[in-house]
Image (cartoon, one colour):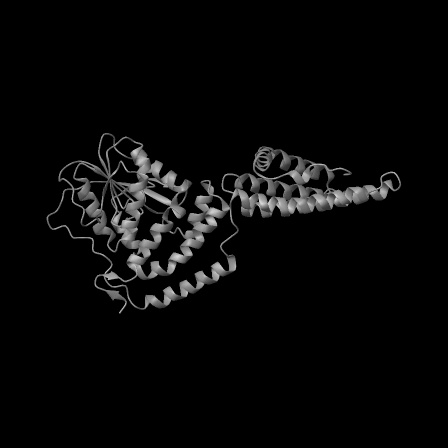
Length: 391
């Protein structure tokens, strides 16, 4: 049997695992933009109830509006993190169907990335409207139709996430994929469309999330409950195992990624910079401009071309270890050096174009170069670059 009672045996494992990595996945610029869009659609002077509040990433933005907030989250792992983040918020343990609020009191009910995760979206939306009451409002956020993990990762990147953050986002979802197949209900797009048929779309956030608004409705004595996932079929086990194997292969191929920290960045910089410093110091010493001016000029020109490639490799390696605070500037420097190297290679056939392209690339990266230079000077040991006796 794949199921014990009403819940999949994997359901608790999924949400306990998800709670541990939730902030690592979703504490990003995309979530901030979603939270801002939700806050912008809250009617003034009304209490707010957020259903499925998770670890409080949306809640913290709602608190900033000054409205009274009640956060509702059924999973203990998520709830404990929310309580630590926002101890001042009233926190309830309940599901959509078990939540009980004072009847006929107008309020705003918020549900961000909840409706598409329940087995019956139509019943869930109806229940949210009843919780809001007849004169209340419901604000719902769901993934944009056709969106995938990779598309969300690109949206996170456009909202300011680093390359490492987006890679981690994809890898963690690959790991959670097998559990999701076993534990989460399968909701067809047609079910979600039917549930939101009366909703008014108000915003598409970063091409990834739809924000919709509905009016509340009167409570019905015979309102149907939003039932939990009853019996995930056993045939999904094979798909889950396949997904698990794929995730393991992906992680084996990619590894856990190099460590991103100031210490790791400086270690990488020093080991490579010392090698380059010694290499080009020897090259300059080997030149003899007085005895062989042409040969010396050719040698130094070749050295300059080689140095461009070495600098691209240096900044490519540094980009893999740069902490998030400096990674965008390191990536900009690397891309600028690539453009300048390409310009130098084209100098013979198009000298003016090469000169212009190199200058433009250099100017565009000036701000990043200054910030990277300051970061290195402030955090890394540069004693190997100091002149020594006889140098």
